[in-house]
Length: 248
Image (cartoon, rainbow, N blue to C red):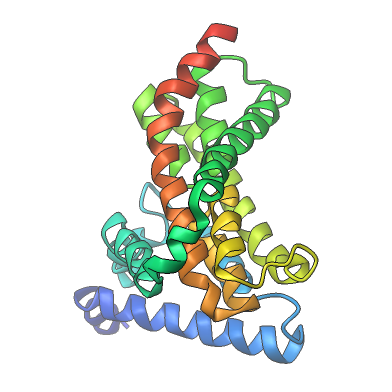
């Protein structure tokens, strides 16, 4: 058994890909056969990931276990950013220009509304200092903006963890809700997909939800969601943090 663990430790990244591949296969199988595609496979996969993460220890989570050490690299910022950029590569520039002012407004509104809602939630949770309110509000934008903002303003690790949790919950909710509401909000073309991505910000949730709706829409929603994430990383620890400070 020790020899097997040593082999897995030396080939951590390969084993990490294998584990994620198995999780995705099971998630697609359950989504198709058990839920009849009513729950997107991505949402099931995220739930699997959260369940596995529960058994992790220390700062690296599941990667703290030697056999799963490759998860630290696979789930790190380098491959995450590569994945975000790659999703936008299939977008057509001519379609992107059609979003125009609506796309820009959606990105700004998406950040401000999510930040405000997150801040209100934080306040009713008992947080009253500007750093905590800002960090949790940023987490409501995405689980990427939350920790970036928390680190910038000097929030505690507990508050940063809460901001990540809120962002993950939002991502799962968007993933499940998108295919359900798509027909009701006419989410069936690149223009609405870009506005939708900008408003909801979360690249993972928007991409997974649009994939369950129409694969052709994924690059457009992911593009504005990615821009929204980047904009959130700029606005939350600066202008929005300053505004919160004026009211605290």
